[in-house]
Image (cartoon, rainbow, N blue to C red; front, side):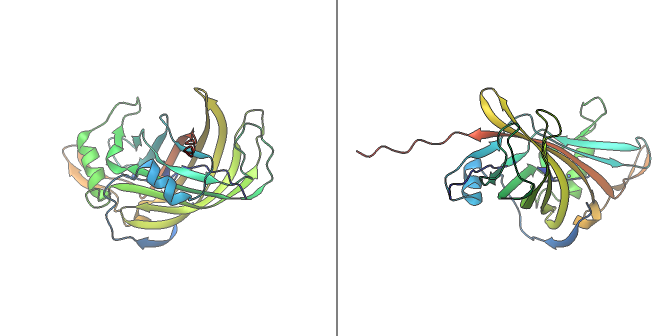
Length: 259
């Protein structure tokens, strides 16, 4: 059967995405990968890994963002870090709504996705959007073991359509299940995601948004606990992952003509 393909690089969590304290539904079944994800995979290699069949492919575009929010004891009661880059691809079958307002039957979708975020792309941010501190970025990288695990990874395992758009031009509501890997430890997460088919710059696109809460200790990442000139600083265990993942349709490569 001819398949539509759609690929997704997020969070968290996306996320997921994912991601947390500083350089990064409750999680369960944590496992350590024990390997270094040394370099970001190319979109072409991800496309091959996700699907060996011809189809419609969506790849990451500019405009994506992963944001992680947490709490602290002093100075600022809250903190946030952001990355403007979410890489990866996603594949969907013919029952997936890829057009605005397209009719779709609720239920499990034929969909796969692989997402990555480079840990060093995460930066501590002030509320006005400017960078907070290089030192805090270093602390984040240390806690996320960036020298050993350079990427935060997410692999989608199941996607279920729950609701169609409630308004004209609104997003589709999905429940997603997948594996989020942070600092070499993988947990299964479930979260609601919203997918909006759009058209921008003459290109068919998807905007995937969502958020979820995770505990750093579920990924064997200890909360920050350091002494600075301003005092003793600790951060909370739970953080919130918020993401917007923009994907554009990859143009099909024309078949070579036969001489």
